[in-house]
Image (tube, rainbow, N blue to C red; front, top):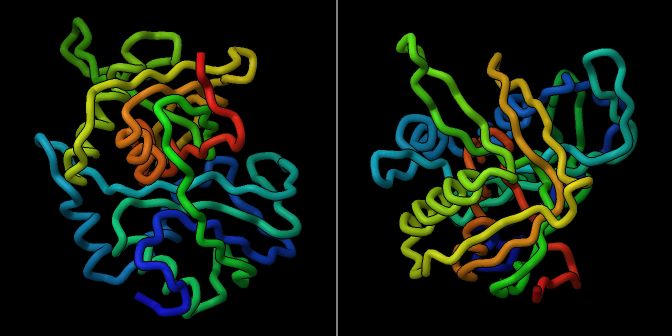
Length: 257
């Protein structure tokens, strides 16, 4: 590990770039995903691409990242950012987050969509305390789905909303698999509901030609603290490594109801 960071275990970073003018497509997840992968060593990148962390016949990348934050305006099918741009990256895998941090420090300037972006600051974020009841907000939207068989034998992807029971159940199963990979000891207690229906909204994201339905907002979460920690570190739901399911604890806002 690069001694500049000091901590033995870093799990989440907030990265700020100096930006004069950055133009990205409205749906830019694949661009940021590629940027994150290119911060990794060739051997570890190959491991994640070809194998990942396996459990029960499923493969997990065990990292997630946020959407881009900063001042922007939409121009047709692009978002145009001016001024500092921030995003977050998180993983329970120490090797992953340390390689990302080291690459950011060593190189210092990166090209995204043809623009040279100097790294302004790298913040190592301290983990919150994980209680059994907390309020979380999305830094990138949550998606969870099933692949269904239609009457004609073709397959259909069905994306669940937070108002369907399958949303909670599938998120819980997904979290339990991630926790098992990480050798966590946990109970199956987990429940997530929107804090405010008016502020919980569906978003449509196109990722490499595929339309993905996801949800963003603020949520009440109750569950085993070990599962909530995994949710924070690795992401909630599906497609975390494509920029979905990154959550943060809302400060000073616990839920005791």
